[in-house]
Every structure is written in structure tokens, then in C-alpha cells.
Image 1: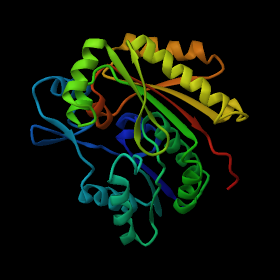
Image 2 (image 1 turned 90 degrees about the vertical axis):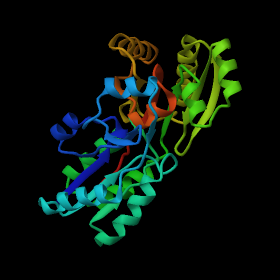
Image 3 (image 1 turned 180 degrees about the horizontal axis):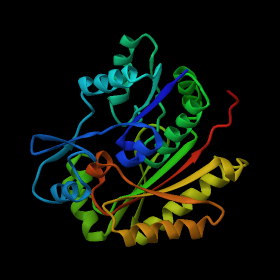
Image 4 (image 1 turned 180 degrees about the vertical axis):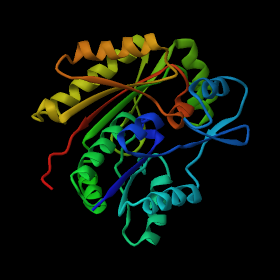
Length: 291
């Protein structure tokens, strides 16, 4: 059984990484002033944030059915027997449910995993899928394994400005203005399904410390007793400089010296809603299964 692994750019995996790993990558669309662009294809980090912080109208969308099915057809025609597709969480986008509907026309050759993850935790799921595929697992089996382990993850995101949450309707204009004056930094969380409010603190330094405190609580409660070799800790950021990325990664490494911390930029689909200067972190549990 030759099973292909496919995901989208919300995993934090770049086109270069995907090509090197033998993973197929769907670039997520971003609409700027009515024109559709694709993350990592014709839209770079600098051009995206220039549009986002300028006077341009920036929004996100799910991939078109045609783009998804064209990629599936291309993969199957290239010699693969099956595809396991891992899109972003169904709780954050309709793209997962849409893909499941499209897969019904493929007689089981395409399996869509509703993995309830995004960003650094989604990356781990994709890497697990690739591991199982290399061992000869079927797409249906990989889907089962990923969905069984889906909720064993945790994400926290600190937002630097309320402006972009206001644009998305999550914060009122008055609330955003007051938050700006008081230097309020909301900390958001994703515990499997939706993006929810977690805490509000004054200043980004306190927001980072609040996320680390939340992580320590997760290690001591939800993930207590799980061997460290089955845990993965990923740092993330939105529009950060190289120095800011290193500072955040080093801070997490110092707080959790027993963990290897990796870093991914938050996808444009996430950054569009939280704006630049955001910090994120996620824990993932690696599944432990015999094929």
C-alpha cells in the first residue's frame, strides 16, 4: 500500500519542507483587495504583512473544491494508491467538512482526518501520518490513529493588538480602544475545537509568562504521567523578527529544559485574525500504536 500524506499551510510546513519530506502541500488562499493569492506560492511573508498592516482589505478563504480535487487526482495519477489528507481543524474552518464531502467521490482512496489541530500541533500530526505511511499503513488506518489522538494537544496564543480581533468581530471597537489604552494583551487558547478567550493581562511580557504558567499546568494535569519522549513543544509567532523568534524559543527552552522546542511561523490564515506581533505555543502528544 502506497499512501500519500497531504496537508495545508496551516500546519506551518513550508513548500520547501514538504518537498524534502515527501509531503503534498495545499497552499491556503488569502484575498487581498478582492484578488486571490496563495500562501508561500505568490504571497511572501513580507508582502502579506505589508498588506495586513496597510490600508488593504485582507481576508482568508478555504481552498476551492477544484483545487483540492485537482491535487488529489494528480497525486493518485502519480502512482499512489491512497491519500490521507490532514486539513486544519473543523472547529476553525469549513475546509475539513468540505473536503470530507469531496472525498465521498473517491471510493475510499482519499481519507480526510478531522484532527482538530492547527499550527505547531497540526505539524506533529502530519509528521505522525508520514511515519505511519512509510511503515505501509493504509489511509483509513492513519485517519483512525490521528483522530483517536486528536484532542491530546493544547495551544495558547498571545495577541499584541486588538485591532485584528475587532476587524473579525471578536472585539468591539470600544473594547479595542480601551484595550489599547490599558495595554491589554488577550491570551487565547485552542483545546481541540475552537479559538477561545483564556486570559487578559497587561503587557506582552506578562502574556508570555501567563502562557508558560498554563503550559506547566497542562504538563501537571492533562499530560501528567506521559513520558517526555511522547511530548512535543512548539513555539510560534506572527510577523516576528528573527530576534523575537529566538527570544521566545529560548524563553520556552529555559522554562522546560527537558524539552526540545521547535519554531514555526503562524500561517497567514491565523495571522490575518490576530495581527502581527502575536506569540503562540503548543503541546502535542505523540500516539503510541502498533500497526
